[in-house]
Length: 85
Image (cartoon, rainbow, N blue to C red):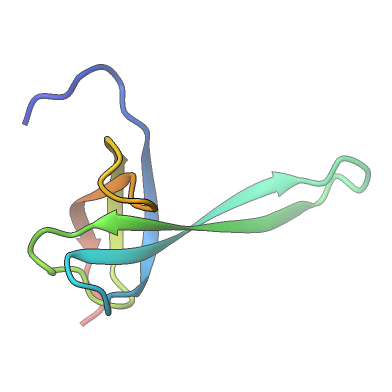
């Protein structure tokens, strides 16, 4: 699979797989508080394209940025890193 340029990648956990060929992936990141210098966990949810409906809830997946596939989908699941069950 050849790629054009550098595409963003994220690692997250699947929180929903109820849609057909789509999974909702929650990505956590740490942000340093500007005053207290304490790290705070922030999260974002991305809808990712899952062609084979292979990802299940709780799986750790690698998602990669892609062209817009629908109103909300701009990511594809490249691989399942760790399967929950």
